[in-house]
Image (cartoon, rainbow, N blue to C red; front, side, top):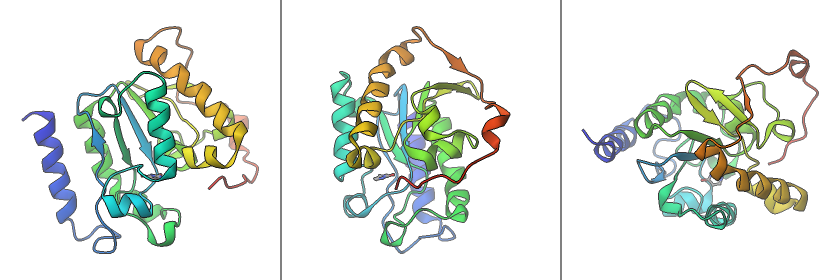
Length: 207
Ligand code: URA
């Protein structure tokens, strides 16, 4: 089976899985882009506009993400864009741990089918799904090796809409992506994060 057919099949399974939290409450936003992409951008969960259009990252934050993709010379259709939780939580609240857990097998399968070289989690939630001990302000833009792939956590574009400093850092990290994909000048960080980071201080919420 080719990748597009496999993804279609997975989407149909997801659509029909009545046990999933948020089933029947909001639309399925499966993801879009190239099944042969090298880079997969993964956000948290769809918001209002994404739910309406059944497409990921189409609101203001999404427009910023898509502009930044084009600014580094890529086409939106060449990458793949999706979320961990594939339906909008009510009132745009953060996804609950049980929602993340329930959608996990589908995201895992989606990643397995697409098999990207680089995963770029957007924001703290998505980053911590892949790198539980990472800290967004310290680790965004760094290149981690995880299960044979590279993971490059990035600030969530919604956070960049609220802070020029975050926007500038996000843009700087974006500029590094073509070299990371090409394997040039890679400074790889193994998955393990230094133990001192485990003594977590309470973190301010970004979004
Ligand atoms: N924020 C996300 O995390 N995902 C979207 O699709 C839109 C906004």
